Each structure stands twice: as structure tokens, then as C-alpha cells.
Length: 143
Image (cartoon, rainbow, N blue to C red; front, side):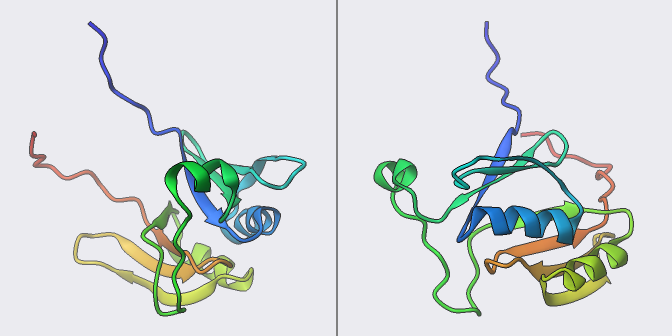
């Protein structure tokens, strides 16, 4: 019997300029670039088990199959995706992100669930959560 238990391979962030976004994430958040293809239509960052990948907002491969990507119409709207990054020193990571072009949203603060969290926007307006590691709960509910 085969078990259908997936591993989370990568998440794709749709951006205006793949090369600029890859460079921004590398500098602002401390990632190494794994790959940026010659066409600049696909880029990847080394981020542990799960790859953060970037591709243009509009491309025929996905627009024709699944429909065009919907982007926020105003700066007060947000995409239905949040990139969450974990750091040992949240304050230093937040500061580095701002110093390297991220737009501040909320400075890091300790949340009621015990995690320190701050928010920025990347160069495409996507929300990036910068947080501390969250200890696993002691009482998990089985489904």
C-alpha cells in the first residue's frame, strides 16, 4: 500500500522582476541564491527543505492553464500569501530587511502565543513575517 504523504518542496512567489526579487531576498533576508535562469523567468533561494522560488506575475505557462495571478489593486490591500521567515534574532533580521529595501509594516513585538513577530513588505508589496521559532504545543489535537 502506498502512502500519499507529501513533502513541501517549494513555494512560488509571483513578482514583477525575478532577478530584482531574488537579489532583494538574498540581501534583505540573508538567503543564498540557488538558481536564476538565463531568461530571468525563474529564480530560487536556498532555504532549507523548502525552496522559495520566484517567477513573473504573468506568464503563459500558468495564465493559460490556471488563470492570471491577481495582484492587490492598492497599497492597503495584500496578496493572499504571507512569506514567514524564522530567525534567532528577530530584531536584527527586521533591521537588516529595512536597511536593504523592505518597507516597514510593524516592528517586532512579542505575541500572546510566545512568538516575537515583525512585518515588512518586499519590493512587490508581498507581506513578509519575520518571527522567532515557535515552540511546538504540548497538547496537539489529532484529526
